[in-house]
Length: 149
Image 1 (cartoon, rainbow, N blue to C red):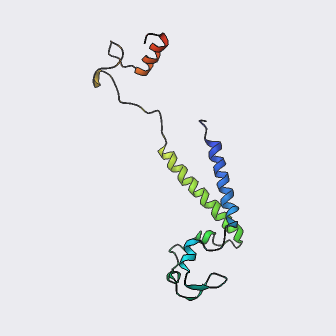
Image 2 (image 1 turned 90 degrees about the vertical axis):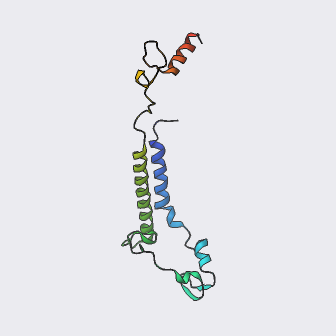
Image 3 (image 1 turned 60 degrees about the vertical axis):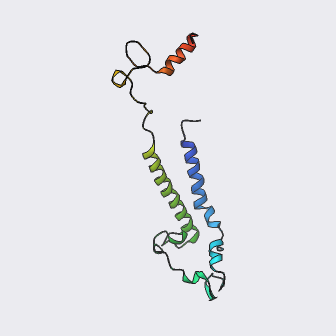
């Protein structure tokens, strides 16, 4: 495996930006399964507004963040729907990438893992007779190479 993941990460970011910025504009405008099940029992017009009947969707309220700048898959103030949806998708991808990248950066290893210290203060050492600690795996490799084991 390559020790440089940047081409893979940047390629994934580019694909995500393309999907969010362009392809998201071609998503279906028809209600998904949850929305359509909540509309059962009601009659709706071409704009998906309830015109009669009785269904759970009649109790729906606006979300607390309905007036936020990125509500309804768009950016408030951008009149072009295609551009508004694309920009909100791109902004969402960049914010998610920055947040995820920051968390991975904080959780990264900062050096080689170190084991518990060995030596005279921590009990008998493994290796040399003078009390200095050695790496048993290095000694085993050297013994195998010399043919003594």
